[in-house]
Length: 226
Image (tube, rainbow, N blue to C red; front, side, top):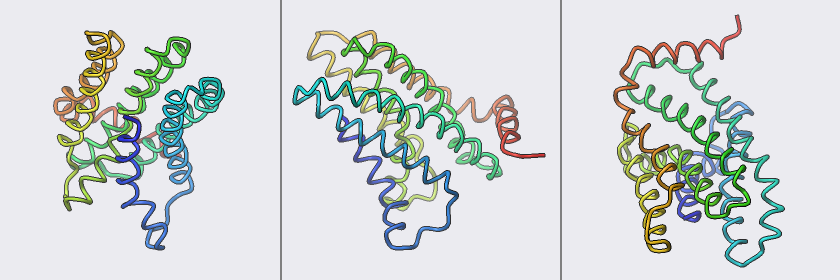
């Protein structure tokens, strides 16, 4: 599961960030963007490493790195919130893509933060902890998934439906794993799935609502110094 997640992130950002950076074609970006990317990629790499350590029974090292993981996860949440505010302040929200990406960003920051905090509180309950970490990571995959699909298929619009279906496929994989191991879907999986699927269902009505537009205006003003 962690390798699949890493594939989406590093293939999507590989084509739109790492490759252009390596070839010198990446445009000038504010330092905060690179810092955000550092935390984001570090989280994915750590996720793969932590899963590997559990599989090879290096539990002590896994727990030691977990402390570092708390710092990285906190950075992901804080930098994600900062980037969202700055993006909204620099973008005139006119199209469905603009509002959709804003919605994805807000939901990702809030949901990741909540699931991550609950996962840390349940660090001594591995079956709960590992599922919540996976669900928290699924929430922040859309930027990588979007970029992969848009670059691969040369799309001009953000493929929100395809992104959501991909996320749901990962959720289904966790549910199938539960069923095979326990003969049922765990409460943790049901809660994690609900935390992702409910915002998906609300996507269209929310981004078209006046309330969301007002929220966007409020957040946009946070990025402006007057």
